[in-house]
Image 1 (tube, rainbow, N blue to C red):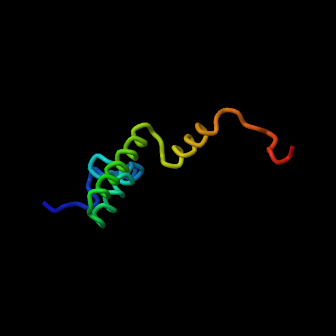
Image 2 (image 1 turned 60 degrees about the vertical axis):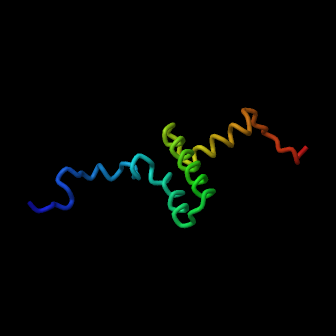
Image 3 (image 1 turned 90 degrees about the vertical axis):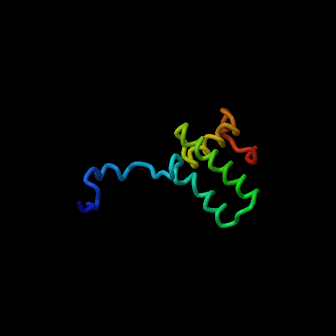
Amino acid sequence: MAMQYPPANAHWRDSARPSKFFIFDAKAAFPLLLFLVHITLWTFIIAILAMLFFTFLNRYGFSVDVFFRWLRSFLAGHRKVAIPWWSN
């Protein structure tokens, strides 16, 4: 039997699914590529930590941009000053 391309069970709606590298998001697997380019212990550790970080973000529904915006607002606090300090 000949292989069909695209597979019979594929649908255009599947194009919106996030790309995966085994169980990891494809963006989280990018540090693994950097490790494969320069194979040392410290790049392996950095790649694993980066993959864990991106997987953690993905698990809680954050993108990298949204996470940095959340972090910035967390560090800035709830109080927003309406008058700049230099115009006193």
